[in-house]
Length: 194
Image: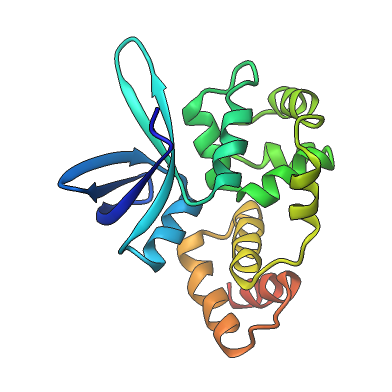
């Protein structure tokens, strides 16, 4: 089993990355959150992996952190959630936000993710609420770093119908000028400029 790959990013798109390690190029399917992390530092990256085998294909999924990979592995245990749906969910919300939505039984936050309906959201909560351990709860209750505040604001704006391409430059500029901005301030500022 391949646990992680360490190397340099050769190709990067919002859905996939090719990492060169010791002369071999590995293609991995990734979430938007992993894409954002990899854009920051394309050299000497460490990507955690999940190797999925089907009858017709073998697919490597890549994650910027262990928490994201662990949540992915939990999500695919839910009936009706395959690897593609799990990656979509991790693209809609980062692992912290998604875990928080499950722990808080926030059906609306899960339904806001493309392809997730009310019944699927309820099934996810029912199946996973007790599987998110105490370590995850401590992680969820810790202070949000600036990057997670940005991601949370962008996710909320997408739910409100504001495209990420429009919102991201505004949010980033505000964080550059005032790093202590709250999620609410970032959302209000972006909505004013729409």
